[in-house]
Length: 345
Image (cartoon, rainbow, N blue to C red):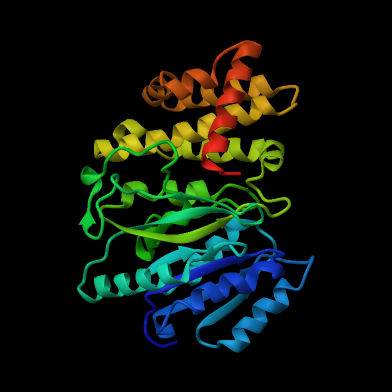
């Protein structure tokens, strides 16, 4: 199969025929030497359009560069798992089929990673910026990490500054060294939404070195009907959010995480997940919504008391747990303001 690729790009595909060409072309148009990469298209049991046929078409069009795989439907996480099991690249990057890369930014990313690998410098995690892209509304919101992460040099967690609430290292930001993911035996749960949180969170304690490029690489498309981040969908799938949050709680005793900067960041990320669960339960019309909201906080308390005390005593933790109808109203207002500021769904 030739030399080891520099980067394995994995595109999970489920009924995305309308978007797939844009995603693939955003890679092909940016990489001058295509022998540096491989593109793994994982068809996750598509049945509602011709995604499966398109995946095969792209493999036939670019043999030795694009590889098509078909599997019984297992969800986004299982498609990522399949891609990771097949990946031969030094680095691993997920691109959802309805999203795309900025070509100029990707050109620079591939060039810099090529330079780093050539010199034997292999950061465990390469970080770039991403854009919430509401194309139909002509709205874009850039999430960057300037003044939080050192730029254009190798660094460790001790060099990291304080992340703002919106500056989370989502899947869109992360280019992991493939060996890191293999070493921790990362496996995402099947038939579960929001597994991107696990993908980016679980490997963090294994990350010793990082590298930040101030490139607006990933365009995260917001607006597709039925998209998992749409508010109504998130409310309907609140049990999925709760499951993911429980997996994150179970993964680590955060007080044991070193160094302090990493522990602080992981605590902030977990607080975000706890807040999302609390707010969307309060936005729902489930008869047991308060029971479930209290239960997820109790789950954290039972599993990791020091982290519970820290998160529960934070401003967000207190707002998420304000009692009664006024508590619900204040939490909802806070969510609406954040939604307006950051355009995240």
